[in-house]
Image 1 (cartoon, rainbow, N blue to C red):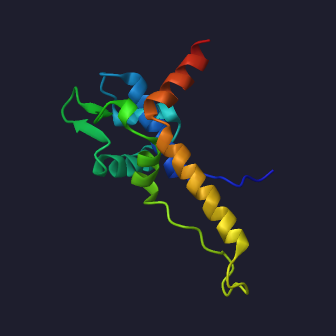
Image 2 (image 1 turned 45 degrees about the horizontal axis):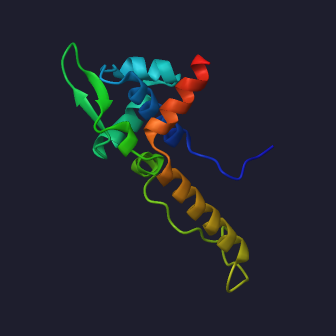
Length: 140
């Protein structure tokens, strides 16, 4: 069965990486270990990490004991911030049919409303919320 809402692989990797780093607390995480823990290729993880670092969500520490950590408290980072760091800002939805015969496309309006609701929901969920829910469920 298909899904109406579908995140890109990069957005999903970014969110997973942020949750993993939140769970790691003060411990620095090596890039290779992060890719392995999440189950993706190192080059793909690197592309996503560059975007998160550019957005100032992750900080890096060089050297043999270096690694990655969150740049701020995970309770202050929303899913929307992570998503937009990777995918860019959410834009209003337009009809996907070129030359739509309707002056006002009802489908585009409905999809735009869904996007707005998803945006609000993503803004209301922090990385700390995600980490707490995931790791509480896992340990139960």
